[in-house]
Amino acid sequence: MSVWIPDSPCTPETCITAPAATAGAGRRLARGCGVLLMIATGFVLALVARRLRADARARVARAWTRLAVRAIGVRTTVTGDLAGYLAGDSGGVLLVANHISWLDPLVLSAARPCRMVSQHEVSTWPVLGTLVAGAGTIFHRRERLHALPGTVGRVRDALRAGDAVTVFPEATTLCGAEPVRFRAAFFQAAVDAGVPVRPIAVRYRDAYGRPATDPAYIGDDTMAGSLRRVIRARSLVAEVTALPEISPSELSGSRHDRRFLARLAQRAVADELGLSGSGTFPAEAAADRPGGCPIPDNRLVGAR
Image (cartoon, rainbow, N blue to C red):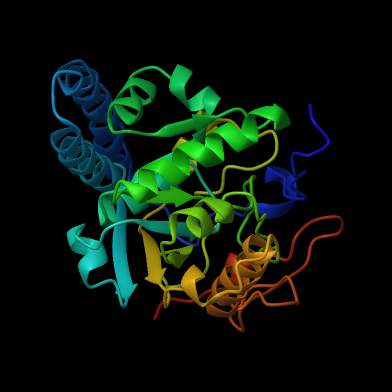
């Protein structure tokens, strides 16, 4: 493992709590069946998508992700000044978001047609890997530092072609309570392409509107374990907040611009999430566990 790859301080043992409310057995069974149905549908679409044009593949991928998110019981809300960004007609833009879960790319793809930058391992996943590859995902190998400039170059070319590209600059997943830390590398693509950066804040809430840890995919967690937690939760809401864009054209053009862009985007997302410096959840926050991240204590939550 390269020392360049960030080491997440979050683990399932210290950061994930039981949901404030769980879904009934019937609903959990329905969601499980929905997941199997979406896997089967995704397999068929992955084969068909290879024969479609890029724009058609993007529409197919978006439709599938929207259905998949709903099938596992997650409702998505989108707020902020998205305007043309939701319609997909705004031209090239680099979307940068904090990273909590494997759900994040699905939620963002369902909200807005875009190309994702994802770690290479995702391309090897059954069904999903083929589907996201067909949707134009740009894969990169985090452990190979020498390959990073090439990946940044592919992102730059996609932006110049008018695509929206989504990157998770934290380069790891966090539970949602840790301070936001954006790495600067992929911001260079926006500088070179001369396109705006659109910060996106992602968070998950439970049935009572409190921060939810069920979707987190951190540490030595498994996809199956995270999926089970999502299915058992009574009601999960993925909140996507689009923040004001940052234009590289306003910068000086120095080699440090990408770092300045990264700091501006990081601050915007951190402020929106209430994680600017304390590393805790906003005021609805809660209890600390020794050796772990500050987490919400769902035992204190009452129905509203």
